[in-house]
Length: 257
Image (cartoon, rainbow, N blue to C red; front, side, top):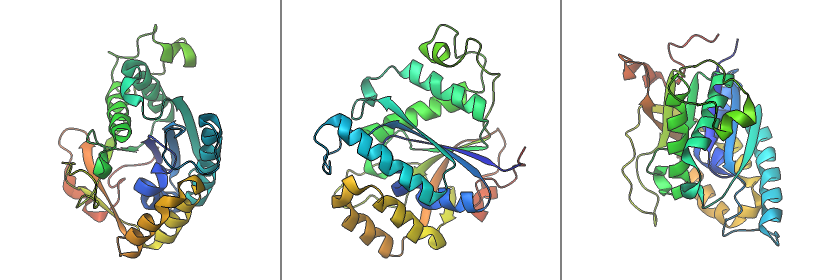
C-alpha cells in the first residue's frame, strides 16, 4: 500500500509555490497526494482576464487542476471559503470538516502552513495552517466533531472513527523573502532535496496564468539554486526522534498500511 499525504493550502498556486517540489518527489516515489485548497483565490490582485470574482474562481480552479496534473497530485478539492476572509469564517465548522477528511483519508503525513503564515506572513496562509493544525489533533480525539455541527450534517450522520495522523509539517524556511514582513516560523526539521523537481515545480506554478506578474520573482528564486523545501515538524507521537528526518524523508520509520 502506498503512503498517503494530505496537503492543506489557502489559494490556488500555494501547492506549487510552497510545496510543489516535495509533493512531486513524494508522488514519484509512489505516495498518493490529496490536496485541499480552502478558497478559489478570488481576492487576488492579479486577475488575468477575469471580469468578476466568479470568473476568477473559475480560471484559478482550472489553473489549479493543470498544476496538480504536473505535480502528480492524485486528488484535489477547492472549497468555497472566502478568500481574504478565512479569519472571519466559522473556525469550528471548518476545522471539523477538515478533521472528517483526515479520518476518512487516514494520511500518514499532513503538510500545511504554520500559524505565522509561513515566510510570506499571509493571513490566509496563517488561518489555513491554524485550521489544518486543529483538524490534525481533533481527528484523533473523541472529544470533537459533535454530531450537530454543519460539518457532520454535510458529510455523514455518524463521523468516522478517530484517526491519529502520525506527523504534521508546517512549511518554513531559512530567511524571509525581500520586501515581506519578518516572521518567526518554526525551525526546519525536514529538509527535502527537490533539485530534480525544480523544473516541474516551476512549470506547475506557470500553470497559474492569472498570476503571471509573479512569475519573474518566482523564476529568479528558483534559478538562484534554491532546490530545497523546508518543513517544521509541528506534531508527532511522544518520544519521536526528530533525527529520523535527517534523511529528508517525511515517512522515515512509517510503514504504509
